[in-house]
Image 1 (cartoon, helix red, strand yellow):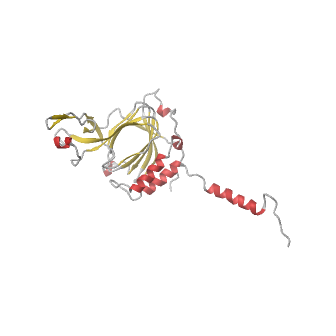
Image 2 (tube, rainbow, N blue to C red):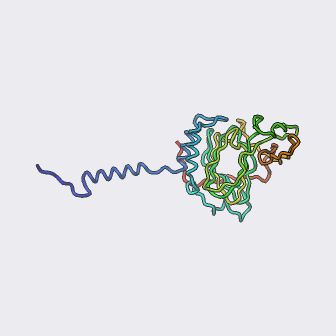
Image 3 (cartoon, one colour):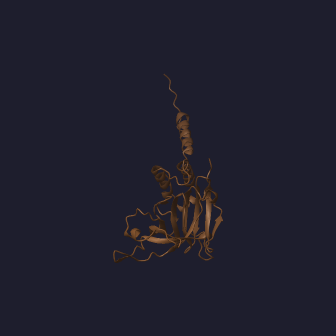
Length: 267
Protein backbone atom coordinates (compact mmCIF):
# COMPACT_ATOMS: atom_id res chain seq x y z
CA UNK A 1 0.00 0.00 0.00
CA UNK A 2 1.31 3.39 -0.95
CA UNK A 3 0.98 6.18 1.60
CA UNK A 4 1.15 9.85 0.86
CA UNK A 5 3.04 11.86 3.46
CA UNK A 6 2.26 15.58 3.55
CA UNK A 7 5.25 17.88 4.01
CA UNK A 8 5.51 19.74 7.32
CA UNK A 9 3.39 22.92 7.41
CA UNK A 10 0.99 21.79 4.67
CA UNK A 11 -2.04 19.60 4.14
CA UNK A 12 -4.21 18.73 7.16
CA UNK A 13 -1.97 20.34 9.72
CA UNK A 14 -1.91 23.58 7.77
CA UNK A 15 -5.68 23.54 7.49
CA UNK A 16 -6.14 22.90 11.20
CA UNK A 17 -3.74 25.70 12.07
CA UNK A 18 -5.67 28.10 9.83
CA UNK A 19 -9.00 27.15 11.44
CA UNK A 20 -7.47 27.57 14.88
CA UNK A 21 -6.35 31.09 14.05
CA UNK A 22 -9.84 31.94 12.77
CA UNK A 23 -11.34 30.60 15.99
CA UNK A 24 -9.06 32.77 18.07
CA UNK A 25 -10.06 35.82 16.06
CA UNK A 26 -13.71 34.99 16.65
CA UNK A 27 -13.04 34.78 20.40
CA UNK A 28 -11.61 38.30 20.54
CA UNK A 29 -12.09 39.88 23.97
CA UNK A 30 -15.18 42.08 24.32
CA UNK A 31 -14.25 45.62 25.52
CA UNK A 32 -15.23 46.22 29.14
CA UNK A 33 -17.61 49.09 28.26
CA UNK A 34 -19.38 46.86 25.74
CA UNK A 35 -19.78 44.15 28.36
CA UNK A 36 -21.11 46.77 30.79
CA UNK A 37 -23.66 48.01 28.25
CA UNK A 38 -24.87 44.51 27.40
CA UNK A 39 -25.13 43.56 31.07
CA UNK A 40 -27.15 46.73 31.80
CA UNK A 41 -29.54 45.87 28.96
CA UNK A 42 -30.09 42.45 30.48
CA UNK A 43 -30.32 43.57 34.11
CA UNK A 44 -32.75 46.49 33.56
CA UNK A 45 -34.85 44.87 30.80
CA UNK A 46 -37.83 44.18 33.07
CA UNK A 47 -37.26 47.00 35.56
CA UNK A 48 -38.72 50.46 35.93
CA UNK A 49 -39.19 53.20 38.55
CA UNK A 50 -39.08 51.64 42.01
CA UNK A 51 -38.51 48.14 40.62
CA UNK A 52 -35.18 46.76 41.81
CA UNK A 53 -33.33 44.13 39.75
CA UNK A 54 -33.17 40.65 41.26
CA UNK A 55 -30.31 39.99 43.73
CA UNK A 56 -28.65 37.78 41.10
CA UNK A 57 -28.77 40.59 38.52
CA UNK A 58 -27.52 43.14 41.04
CA UNK A 59 -24.52 40.90 41.73
CA UNK A 60 -23.95 40.33 38.00
CA UNK A 61 -23.79 44.05 37.21
CA UNK A 62 -21.72 44.85 40.30
CA UNK A 63 -19.20 42.17 39.31
CA UNK A 64 -18.75 43.76 35.87
CA UNK A 65 -18.22 47.21 37.41
CA UNK A 66 -15.89 45.84 40.10
CA UNK A 67 -13.57 44.61 37.37
CA UNK A 68 -13.44 47.90 35.46
CA UNK A 69 -10.51 50.34 35.59
CA UNK A 70 -9.74 53.82 34.30
CA UNK A 71 -8.01 52.30 31.27
CA UNK A 72 -11.27 50.61 30.25
CA UNK A 73 -12.85 54.04 29.65
CA UNK A 74 -9.73 55.86 28.43
CA UNK A 75 -9.23 58.09 31.49
CA UNK A 76 -6.05 59.36 33.16
CA UNK A 77 -5.74 61.50 36.32
CA UNK A 78 -3.55 64.02 34.43
CA UNK A 79 -6.27 64.88 31.89
CA UNK A 80 -7.33 68.57 31.80
CA UNK A 81 -10.79 67.85 33.27
CA UNK A 82 -9.13 66.81 36.56
CA UNK A 83 -6.73 69.77 36.77
CA UNK A 84 -6.57 71.88 39.91
CA UNK A 85 -4.75 74.66 38.06
CA UNK A 86 -7.96 76.10 36.63
CA UNK A 87 -11.34 76.93 38.13
CA UNK A 88 -12.53 73.51 39.30
CA UNK A 89 -15.51 72.33 37.28
CA UNK A 90 -17.14 68.92 37.50
CA UNK A 91 -17.64 67.34 34.09
CA UNK A 92 -19.87 64.47 32.96
CA UNK A 93 -19.22 62.06 30.09
CA UNK A 94 -22.33 60.31 28.81
CA UNK A 95 -21.64 56.84 27.45
CA UNK A 96 -25.26 55.80 26.96
CA UNK A 97 -28.79 56.79 27.98
CA UNK A 98 -32.18 55.28 27.25
CA UNK A 99 -35.48 55.06 29.14
CA UNK A 100 -34.25 51.98 31.04
CA UNK A 101 -30.76 53.01 32.19
CA UNK A 102 -27.89 55.44 31.76
CA UNK A 103 -24.11 55.03 31.88
CA UNK A 104 -21.84 58.00 32.53
CA UNK A 105 -18.66 59.19 34.21
CA UNK A 106 -18.35 62.08 36.66
CA UNK A 107 -14.91 63.70 36.58
CA UNK A 108 -14.19 65.66 39.76
CA UNK A 109 -11.14 67.90 40.25
CA UNK A 110 -9.70 67.99 43.81
CA UNK A 111 -11.96 69.56 46.49
CA UNK A 112 -15.06 69.68 44.30
CA UNK A 113 -18.39 68.53 45.73
CA UNK A 114 -21.57 67.02 44.34
CA UNK A 115 -24.12 68.21 46.94
CA UNK A 116 -26.52 65.94 48.80
CA UNK A 117 -29.20 64.83 46.32
CA UNK A 118 -31.80 62.11 45.80
CA UNK A 119 -32.40 59.29 43.30
CA UNK A 120 -36.19 58.77 43.32
CA UNK A 121 -37.27 55.28 42.30
CA UNK A 122 -33.77 54.42 41.08
CA UNK A 123 -31.21 51.70 41.60
CA UNK A 124 -27.74 53.25 41.29
CA UNK A 125 -24.33 51.63 40.87
CA UNK A 126 -21.26 53.85 41.45
CA UNK A 127 -17.72 52.63 40.78
CA UNK A 128 -14.82 54.84 41.89
CA UNK A 129 -12.18 54.37 39.19
CA UNK A 130 -9.41 56.41 40.82
CA UNK A 131 -8.83 59.03 43.50
CA UNK A 132 -9.91 59.42 47.11
CA UNK A 133 -13.50 60.45 47.72
CA UNK A 134 -15.58 61.06 50.84
CA UNK A 135 -19.09 59.67 50.53
CA UNK A 136 -21.93 60.55 52.86
CA UNK A 137 -25.23 58.84 52.16
CA UNK A 138 -28.57 58.76 53.97
CA UNK A 139 -32.02 57.16 53.81
CA UNK A 140 -35.26 58.48 55.25
CA UNK A 141 -35.73 57.36 58.86
CA UNK A 142 -38.37 54.73 59.44
CA UNK A 143 -40.60 54.73 62.52
CA UNK A 144 -39.83 51.04 62.82
CA UNK A 145 -36.15 51.78 63.49
CA UNK A 146 -35.04 50.30 66.78
CA UNK A 147 -33.71 53.57 68.14
CA UNK A 148 -34.56 55.56 71.27
CA UNK A 149 -34.29 58.73 69.23
CA UNK A 150 -37.26 57.80 67.08
CA UNK A 151 -39.51 57.68 70.13
CA UNK A 152 -38.27 61.07 71.26
CA UNK A 153 -38.67 63.07 68.02
CA UNK A 154 -41.27 63.34 65.29
CA UNK A 155 -39.77 62.33 61.90
CA UNK A 156 -41.59 65.34 60.38
CA UNK A 157 -42.16 68.78 61.83
CA UNK A 158 -43.48 72.24 61.01
CA UNK A 159 -40.08 73.55 59.87
CA UNK A 160 -39.98 71.47 56.70
CA UNK A 161 -37.33 69.22 58.21
CA UNK A 162 -37.34 65.45 57.71
CA UNK A 163 -35.36 62.96 59.72
CA UNK A 164 -32.84 60.82 57.83
CA UNK A 165 -30.53 58.08 59.00
CA UNK A 166 -26.85 58.00 58.02
CA UNK A 167 -25.95 54.97 55.92
CA UNK A 168 -22.36 55.70 54.87
CA UNK A 169 -19.92 58.35 56.08
CA UNK A 170 -16.44 57.36 54.97
CA UNK A 171 -13.64 57.79 52.44
CA UNK A 172 -13.06 55.42 49.54
CA UNK A 173 -9.89 54.78 47.55
CA UNK A 174 -9.58 52.07 44.87
CA UNK A 175 -9.44 49.16 44.83
CA UNK A 176 -12.93 49.19 46.33
CA UNK A 177 -16.23 47.54 45.60
CA UNK A 178 -19.02 49.19 43.63
CA UNK A 179 -21.41 51.22 45.80
CA UNK A 180 -25.08 50.32 45.29
CA UNK A 181 -28.10 52.29 46.42
CA UNK A 182 -31.77 51.40 46.10
CA UNK A 183 -35.03 53.39 45.94
CA UNK A 184 -35.57 53.13 49.71
CA UNK A 185 -32.29 51.76 51.07
CA UNK A 186 -28.53 51.77 50.67
CA UNK A 187 -28.19 55.56 50.99
CA UNK A 188 -30.55 56.88 48.29
CA UNK A 189 -29.43 60.44 49.06
CA UNK A 190 -25.69 61.00 48.85
CA UNK A 191 -22.96 63.62 48.66
CA UNK A 192 -19.57 63.18 46.96
CA UNK A 193 -16.52 65.20 48.07
CA UNK A 194 -13.33 64.74 46.05
CA UNK A 195 -10.25 64.70 48.29
CA UNK A 196 -8.10 64.24 45.16
CA UNK A 197 -8.93 64.09 41.46
CA UNK A 198 -11.63 61.41 41.12
CA UNK A 199 -13.54 59.59 38.40
CA UNK A 200 -16.85 57.87 39.18
CA UNK A 201 -18.49 55.49 36.72
CA UNK A 202 -22.24 55.74 37.32
CA UNK A 203 -25.10 53.49 36.21
CA UNK A 204 -28.68 54.64 36.92
CA UNK A 205 -31.72 52.48 36.38
CA UNK A 206 -33.89 54.21 35.34
CA UNK A 207 -32.29 57.64 34.72
CA UNK A 208 -33.68 60.98 35.93
CA UNK A 209 -36.81 62.17 34.11
CA UNK A 210 -38.70 65.24 35.30
CA UNK A 211 -41.92 64.51 33.33
CA UNK A 212 -42.10 61.08 34.99
CA UNK A 213 -41.45 62.50 38.47
CA UNK A 214 -37.80 61.47 38.81
CA UNK A 215 -36.48 64.89 39.73
CA UNK A 216 -33.05 65.38 41.27
CA UNK A 217 -33.90 66.96 44.61
CA UNK A 218 -31.14 68.68 46.60
CA UNK A 219 -31.06 68.86 50.40
CA UNK A 220 -29.53 70.99 53.09
CA UNK A 221 -28.27 68.92 56.00
CA UNK A 222 -28.69 70.33 59.49
CA UNK A 223 -26.95 69.02 62.62
CA UNK A 224 -28.93 66.59 64.69
CA UNK A 225 -28.97 68.03 68.25
CA UNK A 226 -28.61 66.20 71.50
CA UNK A 227 -31.96 65.29 72.97
CA UNK A 228 -33.09 64.19 76.39
CA UNK A 229 -34.37 60.64 76.68
CA UNK A 230 -35.32 59.38 80.13
CA UNK A 231 -33.56 62.29 81.80
CA UNK A 232 -30.20 61.71 80.09
CA UNK A 233 -28.71 63.36 76.99
CA UNK A 234 -28.45 61.18 73.92
CA UNK A 235 -26.34 62.20 70.91
CA UNK A 236 -27.40 60.57 67.63
CA UNK A 237 -25.50 62.96 65.36
CA UNK A 238 -23.46 60.10 63.90
CA UNK A 239 -26.60 58.15 63.02
CA UNK A 240 -29.21 60.77 62.12
CA UNK A 241 -29.53 64.17 60.47
CA UNK A 242 -32.26 66.68 59.66
CA UNK A 243 -32.72 67.31 55.94
CA UNK A 244 -34.50 70.21 54.29
CA UNK A 245 -35.30 70.51 50.59
CA UNK A 246 -33.49 73.26 48.72
CA UNK A 247 -32.94 74.47 45.17
CA UNK A 248 -29.88 73.38 43.26
CA UNK A 249 -26.96 75.45 44.62
CA UNK A 250 -25.92 78.27 42.28
CA UNK A 251 -22.28 77.26 42.50
CA UNK A 252 -22.98 73.63 41.60
CA UNK A 253 -22.25 73.30 37.89
CA UNK A 254 -21.73 70.10 35.92
CA UNK A 255 -20.58 70.49 32.32
CA UNK A 256 -21.15 67.80 29.73
CA UNK A 257 -18.08 66.80 27.71
CA UNK A 258 -17.51 64.26 24.96
CA UNK A 259 -16.59 60.71 25.86
CA UNK A 260 -13.60 59.61 23.77
CA UNK A 261 -12.92 56.19 25.25
CA UNK A 262 -13.70 52.78 23.75
CA UNK A 263 -16.98 52.92 21.86
CA UNK A 264 -20.18 51.06 22.68
CA UNK A 265 -21.85 49.18 19.84
CA UNK A 266 -25.61 49.49 20.39
CA UNK A 267 -27.58 46.38 19.57
